[in-house]
Length: 178
Image (cartoon, rainbow, N blue to C red; front, side, top):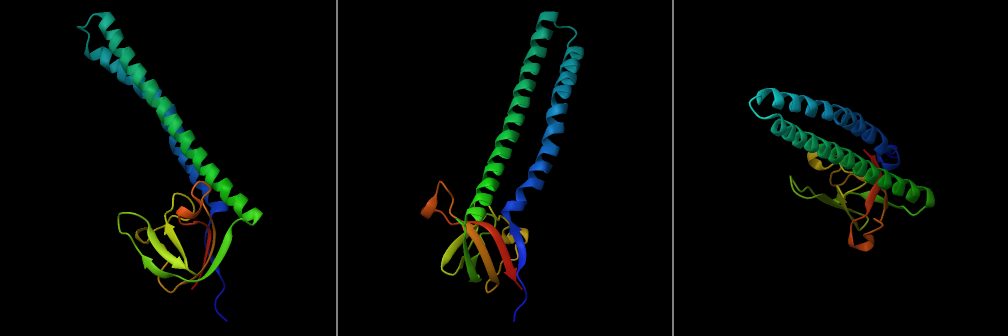
């Protein structure tokens, strides 16, 4: 009898630490950005004492508006990225819980690493997978993926809701048997 299955990836648990890390990075940036802009405005005013106060104020207003726009853009980017990751995780959890995720087992066949462009592609039990696929398992061969030709895998996957048959399935859980 072979070795037990080893869990490599589980989408129902994967997103939370990444989203937390992203938030921990973005929120201080968003908090410091207005202060940096204020400092830049003060510096611009001190470097241009020869300008009339109205022009100096106008330059400061432009800097302030750019800073506010950047703050709004960074905040919006964070919220959109977080929301998309949350929706992908929620879809994976629903698919696993409801039984909509299907399971395939077998050796990896025809692994085609794509180098720096495009996803790695491989076949298991006649079904083609692509890594990364926008959601789900996303470690490519360049990033140290354990996938290799002949490796015995068990994949729980789901069809992307907006893509169905046109796109490769999204891997929501990956187990390997060494």
